Length: 225
Image 1 (tube, rainbow, N blue to C red):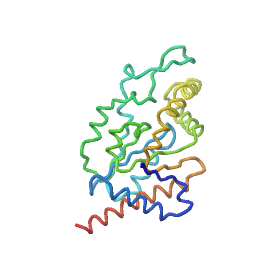
Image 2 (cartoon, helix red, strand yellow):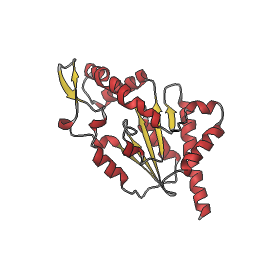
Image 3 (cartoon, helix red, strand yellow):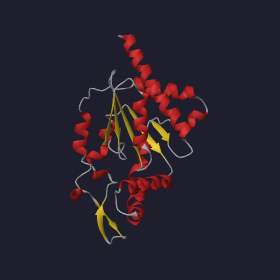
Image 4 (cartoon, one colour):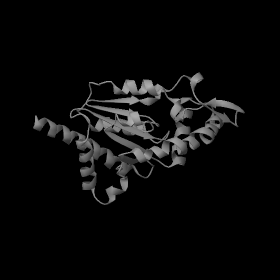
C-alpha cells in the first residue's frame, strides 16, 4: 500500500515525521545520491520550496531540474478550445504537453551532485519518472490562491498576455486540467507539503525535517564506511 505522510502529522508528533523520513531514505536507490520529485499546481510554490531544500542541504551539492524545459514546441502542443478566443489554443497543462521520452532519458543520467530535485507541475504523473525518485513531494495550495499567484507572476513577467487573457486561460485550461491531471497525482506523493498563505510554519517545519534527515543519513553513511 502506498504511504503518504500528510502534514497533519506535525500537529501530533515531530517524531512521526522523523521516523517516516528515515524509512524513506533507507529505501533510496543509492547510498550516496538522492532524487526528489516536487509536483503541484502552477503557482503552488514548487520552485520556491525546491530552492529552500537546496539551501537547507548545504554544504551538500544539489541541482534543480525544472521540467518545464521539456515542453513540446508550441506548434506540437495539444490544444484546447478557447471560447474566449474562439479558436484552439496551446495547452501546457496535460501529460502529453511534455516530451516524455526526452525528459526521462535526461533525468536518468547520473549526476555528480548529492541531491537532484525534479521540479514540475506534472512531475508525479509519469510512472517512469516516479521510479527515478527516492522521495516524492506534492505541494498543496488552495486552487484560488494558486491562480492569484499565477496571474500576478505572469503579469509581472509580461508573460501570457494581458489580464483578461490570463484569467480566461486560468478558467478554461489551468483550473480544469489541475483537477483532471495534477491534483490526482497527490496520491503518489510520499510527502504532502502545504504552501498556503497561512501554512508557512508547517511548510518550513517539513522542509527543515526533510533536509535534516538527509544530512543525518549522509553522516551515518560516512560512519558505516
